[in-house]
Amino acid sequence: MGSDITLFSGYGQKENRTTNYCLLVLRMIYEENPKFLGEVLSNLVDEELADVVGVHFRQQTRKKGSVPDGLIIQRPFTIYIETKNFDWFYDAQLKQHLKALHEDGSGLKALVALGNFEALTDNRFSNIVALCTDEYQGSIYFAAVSFEEFLDALPRDKVSKNLSDTLDDFEAYLNEVGVLPRWKHRLDVVNCSRRPGEVTKENVYVCPAKGGAYNHLRAKYFGMYQGKAVRYVALIEAVVELDGEGGGTLRWKHVDTPDADLMARAEAKRVRLRPGTDPLRVFLLGPLHPTDFRKPTKGGMQNSKQYFDIERLAPSDAADLAERLRGQTWRDFPR
Image (cartoon, rainbow, N blue to C red; front, side, top):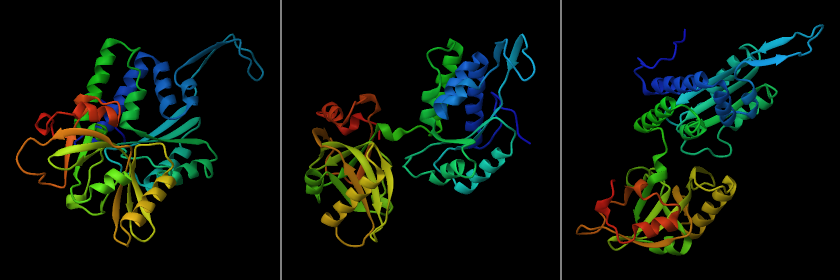
């Protein structure tokens, strides 16, 4: 038996608390104005939901055998939400949700996968989308939604101040539990002293596809370190892991380029720069922009990589970031 959503959640697991607060926010939006909830669900799932949520009033509407003077309608709809604090969705679980949803009443139906997606590649949920289209004949909508997209869909400007303040608190909570994309504010500085030419001439950084020193958190920007300073920065367009046997995985992408094109580009770089069968991680970089972001302490860079939080700089792109970093030192930034 399920539990009612509540302001004072007793759930011990972060995932359950997050679900509770997401539903609570949606309920508060509905209570303020049902149309607002319709707009939110329309942005997240499908445009049809905008006209479904809330009571509708009609008059002189012809029905079979009669024309009532007044008509009050509440169309049925059902939405299942599967929440993950990480990108750990499994097709088997989502398929069970689709089956249960199909058998659950009438009206418009939708399944939402709400998660902390590092990357939504073209085929991430292709099996689930195919099921909705083929087996369920389009009677169930499916949407994969990141927490950032969930926040962006909320009506910040036209709600009351009390609800607006609550939505700000909700965003602070999501940030605190780590489900918002901090990678957008992360600069991955990599020691490129051994092979600077690969970066400067090929716009690529290649390392072994394994953990430890070569394991990288997702970051939006790449910093090329050489000679006690970051000399160039670039947008990380994509990161591809190649298994050395013709296969590979697109880990992240930050551009609209089709997945297949990025995979082919990474494989071409591997063939030209690191022929062989060793598994490799390939960073495909955008244009390099010169900068001078200096390491102020003695000695060279001790580790192979170093992360910097650049949120306070609010760069518009890699060129702007390069300009804002020029002349600054590492001790000025949290790591």
